[in-house]
Length: 395
Image (cartoon, rainbow, N blue to C red; front, side):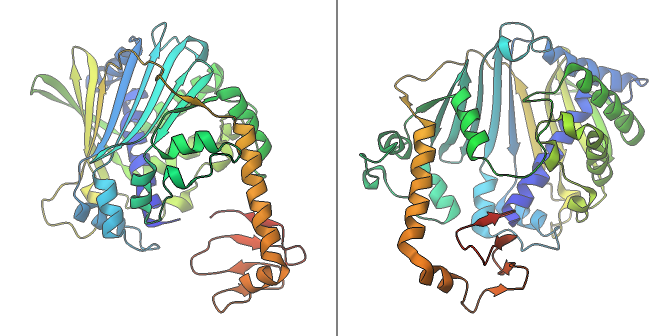
């Protein structure tokens, strides 16, 4: 896993803890904890909600945070600059209060990833249709990999017209049922599929909530910090590593009922996370949760004394989420078949000699079991008796 991905996972897990403390109503027998729980419940009374995540940090601070993982290379300057300017926002609109709504009640959802120069990615779902637009040029610059322009893509190839529009920054749309079907047909093999389908049952949700409440009540302290800047403030403090490990330990008994449960991280994944305490400052306005801030500096190495590494969440009304106009429809089955055909064509053109050359260079080692290893590849397995079969387990 790259340093960028590890850092994003660390930020994501910390964010989950920030919202989890509120959602689980930590320490109900304390008035501050009850106030926090009521503020989170108040959000569920709304019919629309937006949540924005902003890691308000400089590139230097992010590089220092990445150094806390001794098993990985520190984040590069380019990666840090890209992450420092990013914001993630999620919005949802429903026919009824969100606490009572299920999938059939949702009018629209929206996920947006933004950089310092504008939106990088936006994904909306309206009914059974998903809408997507991507700034491919910006993603190419972030990854350091060149991305072809729309004019360089063959329009007469399967899915060519819609791909040209996608690479040109336009909206495309796809039937969500077809997308699920294609994912099942072309998705990676292995792993145990959750029996609960695409959502957790109400019974399982209640059991998980009860378990997490006990965890947060045991490990988190909550204190009322009074009123300032037009909001009531409640601060929750707890040890990050203990909470991260505890959350997933509580979820593990429900692996078969949680979508994607087979991929839950283990204690080993958090071995490099310092078990230092993080304080989360929740702002409450008009009885509802308005925002949360946490300083991630205790998790970073190399920061100057007194320097902060703030993570900020903002809660608000989403308003109306509408379907974009002028979207081009994508036949996802056609696109997947075209991609498979292109891959087979590359193999045929390369031939056996080229395939042999690919694993005979100085940078590769193949053992008797068929394992091929390289400093830049993680978990690539080649069946030497059949070079056309490759299983990328964790690339």
